[in-house]
Length: 568
Ligand code: FAD
Ligand code: NA7
Image (cartoon, rainbow, N blue to C red; front, side):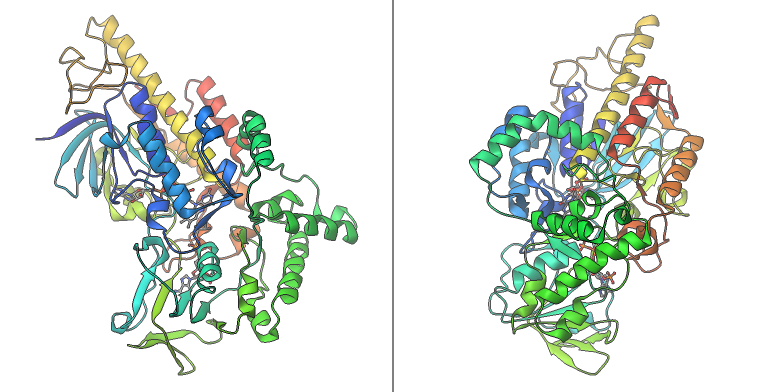
């Protein structure tokens, strides 16, 4: 027997939790499911030592609960992984959401039934769910990238991926190898260096990283943030990256070299990767000369920090400073410890694993007790490739995305009516919670609009009011759940359709393509354009126009009666 819902949310991270709350508050019968054993998404899975957000604490949270915002504690300028997890668990508890979340349950497939206007969802627990709206909050960084090394299975030690870190692991006194030095790698390396007996970093590309500026918060600091919180969110949501600072409008070469150095040094002392890249000057991410100035400043810092010239040489990047900007809590400093070293994989690649450790091309077997893959994620569409989603006329999302993942606004895909993708392809590249809020609120408003039209239609036709109900009174309980306003539950019948047009998707894809054309990010291999996964098409996966402009676009298309959507 199938379960009938108005809406099903898949994923219980920042996105899924808010979406569940929002639609429940609108009175829909809604449930969420997550393959994980608890809520938290990213912060459930990434429990590796050193995990922390690189968005400052005051903006790595929801903005919509003013009381919680001002009272919930965050003792340092950056939230650590377990603190983010505890925060999300707290929100779920506070709003009594857990009863509507099925954990340890994966969405396996979803097919659109055009005659009934429902998504028919099959789960890993053999449940069938009929939902009028399907909202995927699968996360853009949650399908792990686990490189396929020869003889990996022969390794007798412990092997972990940072994105699926089990509880209870200790690195104390062990010989540890870390493959990868992106945002995650530098965090785990900085933490492991302090406890491991030996730490060997298998590095393919050196990275530019700046200090995070993490420190304890003072009461005065917190009071100041609390007083200004409304303005802080307003500024963040209207800025490009939503990291809580004003992005610079000054071209790098428009000031003297002394002034340039002073501005870089000030940002270095203050901390935060996004602030360094986008708060100092306006053109570092697309002007090669500007980029080289910033890169040179960081290279100099690396050379001045790392005492061993050979280690410093290996750690110093020479390519563009054009990946997601990193910040750290003393990454380069760890290489001044005797027991911490680097293997340069470009010069000396990994050949295979052995029972004892990792064998490199020069024939050395690096003996290790633990190998940590900090090798990142199949980002943005990675999670969608693990499930089968079939839209109108049996078209699968995989087919629709055969030339690279696309969507309208990052939230909707033509041929897939009533499917909404939180952080879908070509959404804004920002501090993520404010983008999630923007998308959840847009999706929820659009659903509310469609439901209102449906109720009006039902009223005109003399049918009972309530979410497209054509059968029943509108007051039945579905699986024991009634909407929080006491009305609602979906029973059966033909409901609304919300579908992005193919034209709107094409135009949005062009906008995103154009915006990234000049970016040096596009010329640098990383997950942002899909270049980190062997065989994955290198393509535009983000909107680089900034959150403020994205929100303006949403407002304008809503004013135009949801331009680009068919609402029926
Ligand atoms: P997620 O938190 O990824 O949640 C998605 C959920 O979907 C997961 O729980 C997963 O189990 C579930 N799921 C996936 N497929 C299925 C399926 N088929 N069936 C059922 N459930 C499924 N962003 C920032 O803005 N600032 C930061 O500082 C920052 N730091 C980060 C650090 C790390 C180590 C990582 C990995 C990411 C970081 N991010 C950061 C990005 C982070 O992913 C987002 O900020 C945010 O947590 C995303 O929330 P989400 O709900 O969209 O997705
Ligand atoms: P990233 O940024 O994709 O970094 C992955 C790292 O792993 C990076 O150093 C890669 O080197 C390295 N890597 C990947 N595959 C291999 C193989 N096969 N061999 C050796 N090294 C490899 O992922 P993160 O988890 O650090 O961060 C992702 C985002 O999550 C981050 O931006 C934050 O938003 C949070 P490469 O640079 O490709 O040469």
